[in-house]
Image (tube, rainbow, N blue to C red; front, side):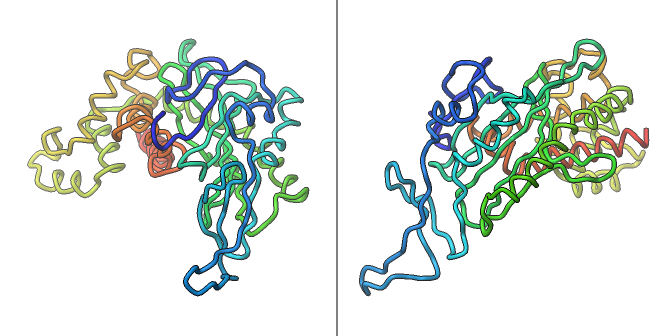
Length: 328
């Protein structure tokens, strides 16, 4: 398996990233934890300077109990959040029928553990363009990184993870984050449950945005400006200033922007009326690029699409697409 992915399991259809081992459908969160090879504990252990036989009190090693692998180093105030505790948190949502586990795994040798649960609902644009909602759990065993639970929709026709950490129209953050200087206790779990509730309602908010984008026409020059503002705004501005007629051609822009322009016409679902010539199609070109094209291999794309620069870029793309569509 690819080097960034240590273990991974999935139920139902093969996920968009194409990685992992298939398992039975309708597993409980605890069963998915076992199936994905995540049922292990993280322990804090003292660091000793060998030459001096001196034990440090300011820093500790994070050690996996099953194989004594050192996952990293942390400060004295770091509290490991165990995988089992976080996955068990989802039990009540699954038992209530609000969601079901679909995939889980670990990245970077166990330093990052994640799970993905499909929530009830979903919506259809134009009768053919389906979007489903998911809750993403991220439990990093990394000093300085927070536990987080957030909403991410997936467009079925192209398996794009569209964006995460949406804000609703009242600007309420639906993402739960907890730094590791706190314990994942009952009080924190109550806060997390409230955030998960907001996240599950985010599908309705995203539906409104998707419908709006799918009904707004996007002109070629606007789309080029949209892509350029995302990946290389200075280059576009320089080309615009140098232009005699106030337009920019593809030859003035970089490889990434040109690749995005091509993807608008070639991505899965490009011929759907919701996508062809619309801001929904332009936005999805960005998500398709970062999920399926950018980088050198699929497991790096997975890491970036959910937890790295690509996740940030997709959030920016949604906001910018709405901005362009509103001005259209």
